[in-house]
Length: 240
Length: 376
Image (cartoon, rainbow over all chains, first blue to last red):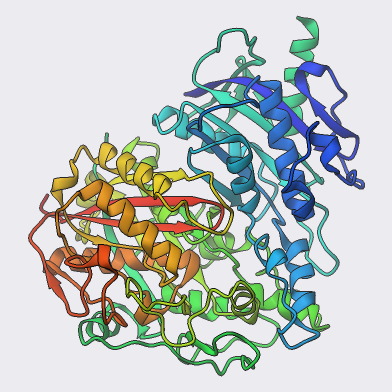
């Protein structure tokens, strides 16, 4: 059985932005995501946020809220924190925007600014820079909705001793026109901070476990996907 | 911890199908970077790339599909309980190009998660699989994750597929970043001026040693160590001090239980860009000190194959270990000062059981693998 403590939760969904300890409403469902501005995420000016594509803004915001919730946003020295995100569509919207700059001038007008964001893992790099995170990082994708797969990967990394702390979750915009839909993938970013142990001054949301057979459990009770996991974590926290 | 070995491999590059044409071509100092004919490239910084010969897609489908088929056709038996990890940066990006040009395409190949499902379905595997995107270290991390799962006893066999295409999307992008070389790229050369793009793929079947013996599989080599780290510096440029790569190599050595002195040769990322190659040499200097061990890059011959690069370089690394011979860095004329005595334009013999293979990519990603001979 793999296990870790859930020490932070952050999200951006169609209902807005949130953090677990602020007891904000969490709804992961269909609809239009809010247009994120720097002020929605960071109190201080941020030179990079305004230049990012919408996918990176979404992912960075989700990670920022999770780290803030865990008390890990502020840093002075780089930290070996890993990042794992699952996505169904990745940066396909940015890909479309970028290639639309290629077509008109036969490539002469291709945007280097947009091209830099045509990798689905670019936002992990943005998060690493912003928060000084030097652990391993990757974006994963499956043919269907990912369920709790990114958290399972994080549990593996923790159990192998590769990281002490990981931020893992899901990140998707609505698919661009013409792109085949992946059922069961609502727009939004939801990230959780997983650590091997409790941290001082941080009351955990509970223990996430993965059985060798593949099932996931929160404090011993089965859990099916990220939405259910977060909802149950928040219920626990609201009872504290 | 279980011992992890590689028991089968498949390869398609601009040199053709299989390892033999690539290995022979590299040893002869030949390159496969040539004028692009797949699309009009005259407006780009470079009109050169290393494309896989005779790659033809059926109408409405991605070139990724025939490339994948040519890879999988080379494989021996794949156990039904094998897990699947794929690695690609842009997958079927040619489908998205068609879509934006107004050609309706129903292919799902543009979806990041489509590839593992295709692999599993084609081979009749039960696992749904997972695609890993970590920029140009994607397949390096896929090999690392596969090895870690086997070592931890979570599974006995994992198939890793690394694959990427040359596309107008990617060529135009690197051109817009002024990152392409107008001549075939010259990794680690003092006059290097950028990278050349390439395409291809590699498949690796990893197994626990017990499973390999039980199934009567011949071992091609071992995966002993792996590590990854972010340099948290810039989204498209490496940290000049090589901190992320140093960290990744340190983690890989630690996992393997080896010191740097045990490494016999290095298969470097070596893209041919000014900053990547300088960063790598800085990192190798920190890891190996004054020691002059053979280092190479194959990207001056087969181009930068993006997410496939790590897996392709593992296949080459296994052959290098078996033959104790590191292929030349094609395109190299005058090594960068820090690379003198490390990189060479001719094959370099070495004596050692372990080879370090490294890759780095956009987003600050750095990854390292330590491969071992079958006997070690």
